[in-house]
Amino acid sequence: MSGAREDQREPDKSPGGPISTEPRINDRIRVNEVRLVGPNGEQVGIVAIGDALRLAQEADLDLVEVAPMARPPVCKLMDYGKFKYESAQKAREARKNQVNTVIKEMKLRPKIDPHDYETKKGHVVRFLKQGDKVKITIMFRGREQSRPELGYRLLQRLASDVEELGFVESAPKQDGRNMVMVLGPHKKKSEAKADVAAERDRRAADRDADRAAEEAEHRERTAAAKSEPKKVRRRSENLDPDIDV
Image 1 (cartoon, rainbow, N blue to C red):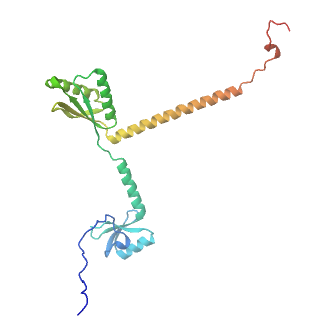
Image 2 (image 1 turned 180 degrees about the vertical axis):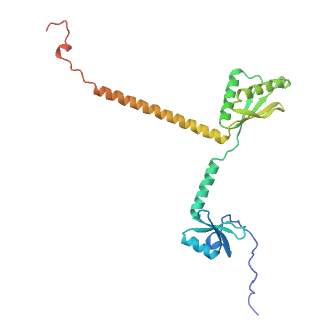
């Protein structure tokens, strides 16, 4: 018998490819019955899949499988397109408000002069107000390594100076030639961002109020100047009084 033999092997049905995270909706729900939830969260009860699809069509909504592992699966009547859009908006807002832990670092010398200390402290204060942690590193050189108490006292002083804004999250400890301490903010990052935004809005409102007050004052002066009668000067007033006319 001539001719090529047909390959009658069944196609490979082994799992593969990306797994969809989308819920099954409408005709893709292939079960006999479902536990149906109405569009406002009301419990309809266990109904046949055909009846559930009919109710969805009559309400111009989608039948969405929200709990596929339940027995029977739980489905809800909803506008799936609107649901997806609102979910994406919420996820975007959550990412925008997500707090990323940031650790700033400030390096000091044990024998730092007062001016430099105040400058460094100002940076630490700014970081803590922003809701960031601050890693303080004291760098020892040469014979300074034999005087660790200098670095310890300096770290204690700094922690005391900023105690209204932060606390000692990690106590001072020797790390090779350095001594390290970590300060944590009292306020969370999200709270600090909200405070900064509120302060920015307050300053903008103050500027707008000052500008409005200046404009009102200018209008009042202009109106007052226009309302004053003009003085009519007579001919004799233009002459020198010592001249006999």
